[in-house]
Length: 220
Image (spheres, rainbow, N blue to C red):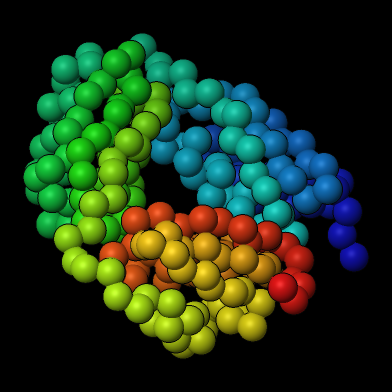
């Protein structure tokens, strides 16, 4: 049996397990399975890592990441230097196309341009999250599929059924004009992410509408 107090302790322990600095600068509050993170850290990747750690804990159904990134003086970098480093990283990434543009203002990295698949958009952001001196990433990349739209509902449903993580009986797929809508419930964040990945992997998808709840399984 669990309650918010037990869940808060579990989240705190998981964050300590993930980050060498532990919880010295991070606070955790929980209400009804929803976790709110506050405080500050020295780097953007620590902010991301704390959120990932919270989502790994069983019974967590929502995470609000309010952690601020306060870069120490000796790790601060100029916006031009950050932009140059970011463009170099993306240039050497075989998954990211040359259509992506990078802008930096006060340590905040903004990604723009167009890509064919969601995987490319996500990879561009993931590749830059460990950059020294950044305070955040804003991903404004647009999905622009190059392939024609066919029957994508059946392949998505088949992918969900093949998955070792997803219980496809609890997630329903609806498709209209390249927009996929997922409805239902996932027992964990891992199951939710796998279902979203399956939807985005279908050629021609421009948007995935998320109507999946996490932490409680029910029939739709």
